[in-house]
Amino acid sequence: MEDKPSSPSYVTLLCDFWSLMMKRKIVVISITLSTGIAAVVASFFLTPVYRAETKILPPQMRHLDIFPQMAALNGYSMDLQRTALALNTPGYIYIGMLQSRTIFDRIIERFKLMDVYGSDYREDARKILAKAFRAEIGKYGIISVTVDDRDPKMAADIANAFIKELKQLTQSLAVTEASQRKLFFEQELKQVREELVLAEESMKKFQEKT
Image (tube, rainbow, N blue to C red):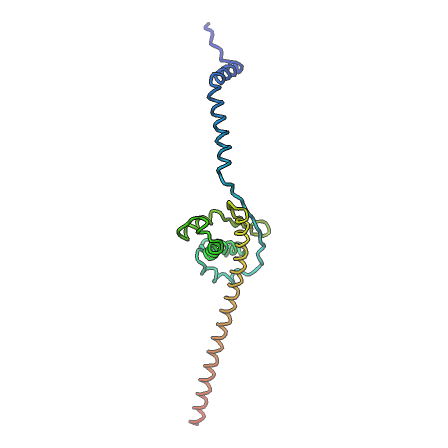
């Protein structure tokens, strides 16, 4: 019978590996040190990014009352409109308002973000702001707004400004809706008055003839 060569034991493999590491110890130590030094140097040169978060509980309102005005906002996607209608919750409408071009442009103007970001075009500033901005619906319908920026104060100010702009926009939409209702009733009243005047004139003519 032939004797089959026995497979090397774990101890043998470990010894061989350790022997190889000792032979290459200079290379291993050099790579480890260079990686550590590069990480330390990068930590000094890289600017940290700060995240500010603020939360708001949207008032319970009928989304159908405000939805016609919402559809007129620039940057408000049809997918988000259908989602808001399907879920029947005002939270998604508020997120759509926060992500609308209307509020983004107001934030860009307020904080002069085109200069801060070094953007020549407003659309570029919108894209940078969109990457730094996030709005989500949490438990109980609470909306959380987070903003990332290299300046912690700037991040907090922009996050709070989003909430302020949201309140102003909802108020303006509510005023617009009330104004539209008032205009509708005024037009209806005017039409009724004109019809009454015509009826009176017709009655006078009929009386004169008879």
